[in-house]
Length: 349
Image 1 (cartoon, rainbow, N blue to C red):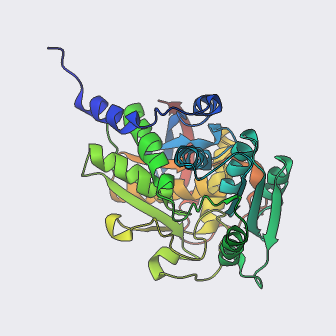
Image 2: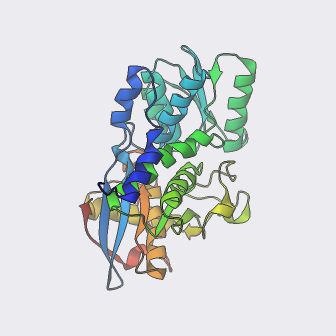
Protein backbone atom coordinates (compact mmCIF):
# COMPACT_ATOMS: atom_id res chain seq x y z
CA UNK A 1 0.00 0.00 0.00
CA UNK A 2 1.30 3.46 -0.91
CA UNK A 3 2.36 5.49 2.14
CA UNK A 4 0.30 8.66 2.57
CA UNK A 5 1.92 11.60 4.34
CA UNK A 6 -0.03 12.15 7.58
CA UNK A 7 0.33 15.95 7.59
CA UNK A 8 -0.83 16.20 3.96
CA UNK A 9 -3.80 13.91 4.66
CA UNK A 10 -4.88 15.95 7.68
CA UNK A 11 -4.56 19.22 5.75
CA UNK A 12 -6.78 17.81 3.01
CA UNK A 13 -9.41 16.86 5.59
CA UNK A 14 -9.42 20.42 6.94
CA UNK A 15 -9.89 21.83 3.43
CA UNK A 16 -12.53 19.36 2.22
CA UNK A 17 -15.47 21.40 3.47
CA UNK A 18 -14.53 24.28 1.13
CA UNK A 19 -16.05 22.36 -1.81
CA UNK A 20 -19.74 23.36 -1.82
CA UNK A 21 -22.40 23.65 -4.54
CA UNK A 22 -22.72 27.41 -5.06
CA UNK A 23 -23.40 29.85 -7.92
CA UNK A 24 -20.53 30.12 -10.45
CA UNK A 25 -19.25 33.44 -9.10
CA UNK A 26 -18.10 31.78 -5.89
CA UNK A 27 -15.92 29.42 -7.91
CA UNK A 28 -14.32 32.44 -9.58
CA UNK A 29 -13.82 34.22 -6.24
CA UNK A 30 -12.20 31.10 -4.79
CA UNK A 31 -9.51 31.49 -7.43
CA UNK A 32 -8.91 35.13 -6.49
CA UNK A 33 -8.89 34.75 -2.71
CA UNK A 34 -6.57 32.58 -0.65
CA UNK A 35 -3.51 30.52 -1.60
CA UNK A 36 -1.34 33.57 -0.98
CA UNK A 37 2.47 33.36 -1.00
CA UNK A 38 4.39 32.46 2.14
CA UNK A 39 7.77 34.19 2.32
CA UNK A 40 10.80 33.71 4.52
CA UNK A 41 12.11 37.13 5.55
CA UNK A 42 15.82 37.09 6.36
CA UNK A 43 17.14 39.74 8.71
CA UNK A 44 20.03 40.58 10.98
CA UNK A 45 19.01 41.35 14.54
CA UNK A 46 21.83 42.80 16.65
CA UNK A 47 24.32 40.75 14.67
CA UNK A 48 22.27 37.53 14.74
CA UNK A 49 20.75 36.12 11.54
CA UNK A 50 17.07 35.28 11.93
CA UNK A 51 14.28 34.17 9.60
CA UNK A 52 10.60 35.03 10.04
CA UNK A 53 7.89 33.57 7.80
CA UNK A 54 4.94 35.70 6.67
CA UNK A 55 1.85 35.25 4.49
CA UNK A 56 1.45 38.01 1.89
CA UNK A 57 -2.28 38.65 2.26
CA UNK A 58 -2.40 41.72 0.04
CA UNK A 59 -2.44 39.26 -2.88
CA UNK A 60 -6.15 38.71 -2.17
CA UNK A 61 -8.79 40.30 -4.41
CA UNK A 62 -9.41 43.56 -2.53
CA UNK A 63 -5.95 43.67 -1.01
CA UNK A 64 -6.22 42.20 2.49
CA UNK A 65 -6.70 39.08 4.57
CA UNK A 66 -10.31 40.13 5.22
CA UNK A 67 -11.30 38.83 1.77
CA UNK A 68 -11.02 35.31 3.19
CA UNK A 69 -13.49 36.07 5.97
CA UNK A 70 -15.91 37.99 3.75
CA UNK A 71 -16.01 35.21 1.16
CA UNK A 72 -16.73 32.50 3.72
CA UNK A 73 -19.36 34.57 5.55
CA UNK A 74 -21.20 35.35 2.31
CA UNK A 75 -20.85 31.76 1.12
CA UNK A 76 -22.45 30.39 4.27
CA UNK A 77 -25.13 33.09 4.25
CA UNK A 78 -26.15 32.02 0.75
CA UNK A 79 -26.17 28.35 1.69
CA UNK A 80 -28.29 28.98 4.79
CA UNK A 81 -30.68 31.35 3.05
CA UNK A 82 -29.74 34.21 5.36
CA UNK A 83 -28.73 36.35 2.36
CA UNK A 84 -31.26 36.73 -0.44
CA UNK A 85 -30.94 38.44 -3.85
CA UNK A 86 -31.35 42.19 -3.44
CA UNK A 87 -30.63 42.20 0.31
CA UNK A 88 -28.43 44.97 1.67
CA UNK A 89 -25.14 43.88 3.27
CA UNK A 90 -24.47 46.08 6.30
CA UNK A 91 -21.35 45.88 8.46
CA UNK A 92 -19.47 47.84 11.12
CA UNK A 93 -15.74 47.87 10.40
CA UNK A 94 -12.46 49.67 10.89
CA UNK A 95 -11.61 49.30 7.22
CA UNK A 96 -10.36 46.14 5.54
CA UNK A 97 -13.44 44.02 6.30
CA UNK A 98 -15.62 46.79 4.95
CA UNK A 99 -13.57 47.00 1.77
CA UNK A 100 -13.84 43.22 1.34
CA UNK A 101 -17.61 43.20 1.83
CA UNK A 102 -17.94 46.11 -0.58
CA UNK A 103 -15.94 44.32 -3.28
CA UNK A 104 -17.59 40.92 -2.88
CA UNK A 105 -21.05 42.26 -2.09
CA UNK A 106 -21.17 44.48 -5.14
CA UNK A 107 -19.81 41.66 -7.31
CA UNK A 108 -22.74 39.55 -6.11
CA UNK A 109 -25.18 42.37 -6.92
CA UNK A 110 -25.98 43.56 -3.39
CA UNK A 111 -26.17 47.13 -2.09
CA UNK A 112 -23.62 47.58 0.71
CA UNK A 113 -23.62 50.02 3.62
CA UNK A 114 -20.64 50.37 5.94
CA UNK A 115 -20.59 52.01 9.38
CA UNK A 116 -17.07 53.07 10.35
CA UNK A 117 -15.36 55.30 12.94
CA UNK A 118 -14.52 58.64 11.36
CA UNK A 119 -10.85 58.54 12.38
CA UNK A 120 -9.96 55.74 9.95
CA UNK A 121 -7.79 56.61 6.94
CA UNK A 122 -9.26 58.60 4.04
CA UNK A 123 -8.10 55.89 1.63
CA UNK A 124 -10.37 53.33 3.29
CA UNK A 125 -13.40 55.56 2.84
CA UNK A 126 -12.51 56.33 -0.78
CA UNK A 127 -12.00 52.67 -1.64
CA UNK A 128 -15.37 51.64 -0.23
CA UNK A 129 -17.19 54.43 -2.01
CA UNK A 130 -15.25 53.54 -5.16
CA UNK A 131 -16.85 50.09 -5.01
CA UNK A 132 -20.24 51.81 -5.17
CA UNK A 133 -21.05 51.36 -1.50
CA UNK A 134 -22.45 53.73 1.10
CA UNK A 135 -20.18 54.72 3.99
CA UNK A 136 -21.58 56.15 7.22
CA UNK A 137 -18.90 57.72 9.44
CA UNK A 138 -19.38 57.58 13.20
CA UNK A 139 -17.70 60.08 15.54
CA UNK A 140 -16.33 59.53 19.05
CA UNK A 141 -19.39 61.35 20.42
CA UNK A 142 -21.66 58.96 18.51
CA UNK A 143 -19.94 55.96 20.04
CA UNK A 144 -17.01 55.28 17.71
CA UNK A 145 -16.63 51.59 16.95
CA UNK A 146 -19.24 50.36 19.40
CA UNK A 147 -21.59 53.03 18.05
CA UNK A 148 -20.97 51.72 14.52
CA UNK A 149 -22.02 48.23 15.58
CA UNK A 150 -25.11 49.57 17.34
CA UNK A 151 -26.17 51.53 14.24
CA UNK A 152 -25.82 48.47 12.03
CA UNK A 153 -27.91 46.41 14.46
CA UNK A 154 -30.56 49.16 14.66
CA UNK A 155 -30.88 49.24 10.89
CA UNK A 156 -31.30 45.47 10.72
CA UNK A 157 -34.10 45.61 13.30
CA UNK A 158 -35.93 48.24 11.27
CA UNK A 159 -35.86 46.37 7.93
CA UNK A 160 -36.30 42.82 6.70
CA UNK A 161 -33.88 43.03 3.78
CA UNK A 162 -30.62 43.55 5.71
CA UNK A 163 -27.89 40.96 6.16
CA UNK A 164 -25.40 41.57 8.97
CA UNK A 165 -22.13 39.62 8.65
CA UNK A 166 -21.37 40.33 12.35
CA UNK A 167 -17.67 39.64 11.84
CA UNK A 168 -16.85 39.97 15.55
CA UNK A 169 -19.19 37.15 16.59
CA UNK A 170 -19.64 35.07 13.43
CA UNK A 171 -17.88 31.67 13.66
CA UNK A 172 -17.58 31.61 9.86
CA UNK A 173 -14.89 34.26 10.34
CA UNK A 174 -12.75 31.69 12.19
CA UNK A 175 -13.76 28.91 9.82
CA UNK A 176 -12.36 30.84 6.84
CA UNK A 177 -8.89 30.66 8.38
CA UNK A 178 -9.32 27.15 9.75
CA UNK A 179 -10.11 25.85 6.26
CA UNK A 180 -7.78 28.17 4.36
CA UNK A 181 -4.99 30.14 5.99
CA UNK A 182 -3.93 27.54 8.55
CA UNK A 183 -3.68 24.55 6.20
CA UNK A 184 -1.93 26.74 3.59
CA UNK A 185 0.77 27.63 6.13
CA UNK A 186 1.36 23.97 7.01
CA UNK A 187 1.45 22.92 3.36
CA UNK A 188 3.80 25.70 2.28
CA UNK A 189 6.19 25.06 5.17
CA UNK A 190 5.91 21.31 4.76
CA UNK A 191 5.37 21.14 8.51
CA UNK A 192 3.65 23.03 11.29
CA UNK A 193 5.33 26.14 12.66
CA UNK A 194 6.30 26.18 16.31
CA UNK A 195 4.60 29.54 16.77
CA UNK A 196 2.06 31.70 14.97
CA UNK A 197 1.41 35.34 15.88
CA UNK A 198 -1.00 37.91 14.47
CA UNK A 199 -2.79 41.06 15.54
CA UNK A 200 -6.33 40.75 16.89
CA UNK A 201 -9.05 42.81 15.26
CA UNK A 202 -11.97 40.43 15.15
CA UNK A 203 -9.74 37.56 16.27
CA UNK A 204 -10.79 35.39 13.35
CA UNK A 205 -7.23 34.93 12.11
CA UNK A 206 -5.61 33.79 15.37
CA UNK A 207 -8.57 31.63 16.36
CA UNK A 208 -9.03 30.01 12.95
CA UNK A 209 -5.35 29.50 12.14
CA UNK A 210 -4.81 28.29 15.69
CA UNK A 211 -7.57 25.69 15.41
CA UNK A 212 -6.17 24.36 12.13
CA UNK A 213 -2.53 24.23 13.20
CA UNK A 214 -3.27 22.66 16.56
CA UNK A 215 -5.43 20.03 14.87
CA UNK A 216 -2.33 19.09 12.89
CA UNK A 217 0.27 19.73 15.63
CA UNK A 218 -1.17 20.21 19.14
CA UNK A 219 2.10 21.66 20.46
CA UNK A 220 1.97 24.74 18.18
CA UNK A 221 1.83 28.01 20.13
CA UNK A 222 -0.69 30.66 19.02
CA UNK A 223 0.03 34.24 20.09
CA UNK A 224 -2.25 37.29 19.75
CA UNK A 225 -0.60 40.65 19.12
CA UNK A 226 -1.93 43.98 20.36
CA UNK A 227 -0.65 47.59 20.55
CA UNK A 228 1.22 48.46 23.73
CA UNK A 229 -0.53 51.86 23.72
CA UNK A 230 -3.98 50.23 23.93
CA UNK A 231 -3.75 46.71 25.41
CA UNK A 232 -7.42 45.75 25.17
CA UNK A 233 -6.76 42.01 25.40
CA UNK A 234 -4.59 42.46 28.47
CA UNK A 235 -6.96 44.78 30.33
CA UNK A 236 -10.31 43.62 28.96
CA UNK A 237 -11.38 47.11 27.92
CA UNK A 238 -10.33 50.10 25.81
CA UNK A 239 -7.22 51.85 27.12
CA UNK A 240 -5.71 54.84 25.33
CA UNK A 241 -5.24 55.36 21.60
CA UNK A 242 -3.05 53.64 19.03
CA UNK A 243 -2.17 53.84 15.33
CA UNK A 244 -2.31 50.20 14.25
CA UNK A 245 -5.60 50.44 12.36
CA UNK A 246 -7.61 47.23 12.27
CA UNK A 247 -6.60 45.83 15.66
CA UNK A 248 -7.65 46.51 19.26
CA UNK A 249 -11.07 47.93 18.36
CA UNK A 250 -12.22 48.98 21.85
CA UNK A 251 -13.41 45.56 23.08
CA UNK A 252 -12.58 41.84 23.09
CA UNK A 253 -14.58 40.21 20.26
CA UNK A 254 -16.96 37.39 21.08
CA UNK A 255 -15.13 34.86 18.91
CA UNK A 256 -11.84 35.37 20.80
CA UNK A 257 -11.20 32.75 23.49
CA UNK A 258 -8.13 34.07 25.29
CA UNK A 259 -7.86 31.02 27.54
CA UNK A 260 -7.10 28.89 24.46
CA UNK A 261 -4.31 31.19 23.26
CA UNK A 262 -0.72 31.60 24.38
CA UNK A 263 1.07 34.70 25.64
CA UNK A 264 -0.10 38.07 24.30
CA UNK A 265 2.64 40.01 22.50
CA UNK A 266 2.49 43.80 22.84
CA UNK A 267 4.06 46.03 20.19
CA UNK A 268 4.53 49.80 20.19
CA UNK A 269 2.70 51.34 17.25
CA UNK A 270 5.72 53.49 16.35
CA UNK A 271 7.90 50.39 16.19
CA UNK A 272 5.37 48.80 13.84
CA UNK A 273 5.31 51.92 11.66
CA UNK A 274 9.11 51.99 11.32
CA UNK A 275 9.24 48.28 10.49
CA UNK A 276 6.53 48.67 7.84
CA UNK A 277 8.52 51.58 6.36
CA UNK A 278 11.67 49.44 6.29
CA UNK A 279 9.88 46.52 4.61
CA UNK A 280 8.74 48.85 1.85
CA UNK A 281 11.90 50.90 1.40
CA UNK A 282 14.43 48.08 1.75
CA UNK A 283 12.63 44.98 0.41
CA UNK A 284 9.91 46.40 -1.82
CA UNK A 285 7.25 44.81 0.39
CA UNK A 286 4.79 47.69 0.59
CA UNK A 287 2.77 46.66 3.64
CA UNK A 288 0.50 48.36 6.15
CA UNK A 289 1.19 49.25 9.76
CA UNK A 290 -0.23 46.03 11.24
CA UNK A 291 2.17 44.01 9.07
CA UNK A 292 5.13 45.87 10.52
CA UNK A 293 3.75 45.31 14.01
CA UNK A 294 3.23 41.60 13.29
CA UNK A 295 6.87 41.28 12.20
CA UNK A 296 8.00 42.99 15.41
CA UNK A 297 5.85 40.56 17.43
CA UNK A 298 7.30 37.59 15.54
CA UNK A 299 10.83 38.88 16.14
CA UNK A 300 10.15 39.17 19.87
CA UNK A 301 9.09 35.52 19.92
CA UNK A 302 12.10 34.53 17.79
CA UNK A 303 14.49 36.28 20.18
CA UNK A 304 13.09 34.28 23.09
CA UNK A 305 12.90 31.03 21.09
CA UNK A 306 15.71 31.10 18.50
CA UNK A 307 15.21 27.53 17.28
CA UNK A 308 11.47 27.94 16.64
CA UNK A 309 9.85 28.51 13.26
CA UNK A 310 7.67 31.60 13.69
CA UNK A 311 4.95 32.54 11.18
CA UNK A 312 2.97 35.77 10.98
CA UNK A 313 0.72 37.69 8.59
CA UNK A 314 1.36 40.68 6.36
CA UNK A 315 -2.31 41.66 6.40
CA UNK A 316 -2.54 44.30 3.68
CA UNK A 317 -0.56 46.76 1.59
CA UNK A 318 0.39 50.36 2.32
CA UNK A 319 -2.04 52.00 -0.11
CA UNK A 320 -4.67 52.48 2.62
CA UNK A 321 -2.22 54.42 4.79
CA UNK A 322 -0.79 57.11 2.51
CA UNK A 323 -2.37 59.91 4.56
CA UNK A 324 -1.35 58.41 7.92
CA UNK A 325 1.85 58.44 9.96
CA UNK A 326 3.11 55.55 7.83
CA UNK A 327 4.38 58.11 5.30
CA UNK A 328 5.87 60.44 7.93
CA UNK A 329 9.21 60.33 9.75
CA UNK A 330 8.65 58.29 12.90
CA UNK A 331 10.97 58.99 15.85
CA UNK A 332 12.86 56.01 17.22
CA UNK A 333 12.23 55.44 20.92
CA UNK A 334 14.05 53.37 23.50
CA UNK A 335 13.11 49.71 23.33
CA UNK A 336 12.11 49.67 19.65
CA UNK A 337 13.25 46.50 17.93
CA UNK A 338 13.09 48.00 14.43
CA UNK A 339 16.23 50.05 15.06
CA UNK A 340 18.19 46.82 15.75
CA UNK A 341 17.14 45.15 12.49
CA UNK A 342 18.76 45.05 9.06
CA UNK A 343 16.52 43.43 6.45
CA UNK A 344 18.55 41.14 4.18
CA UNK A 345 16.02 39.74 1.71
CA UNK A 346 13.39 37.06 1.36
CA UNK A 347 12.58 33.76 -0.32
CA UNK A 348 9.17 32.58 -1.53
CA UNK A 349 8.13 29.11 -0.36
